[in-house]
Image (tube, rainbow, N blue to C red; front, side, top):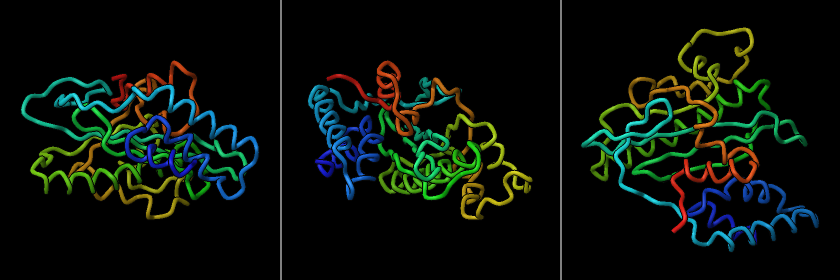
Length: 229
């Protein structure tokens, strides 16, 4: 059951990525509660079978988190997010990102972080790292497909401290313990990626990091380019 859900979550249904990821983390030791949660998710997918990704062909220029039109370009963008200390069993956090192109999501991720972050800044910084890696790869792919990106790809993050940390290579008392690999994004700043702060209510990656109320869930789906067909 979880395998089938995971296939949909990875290819056509980003709205179930978070729930499926959480179920997959307990598949080796499931309880009755987990089985019931999986059944509820199957019922949700069945009830929303008409919901899917929509690529409207909108050529986007993202500014302050809102999309508008810039003629002649199809711009890639990315949102990254993390829910601090949300896995109470081991103190880790859930990180996620979503990359958008042509009005819809083309790549996304919802996964428990392997390291325990000591602050929301640190967990958001780790999520930013994974989002940046995906952006760099997608830019290479788009270039091969003839849709090369002329300008640095904007990555939106709603944690101001994480953005400042990425832009400032100085060591700080609260962040000097962070492993060097998480600073990888700095190599690409203003060359292939550009970081901007986005308001939490415009955070398209929020749906990949936590369980949301129904209204917020549907809003997150819309931000990810999903609609009812």
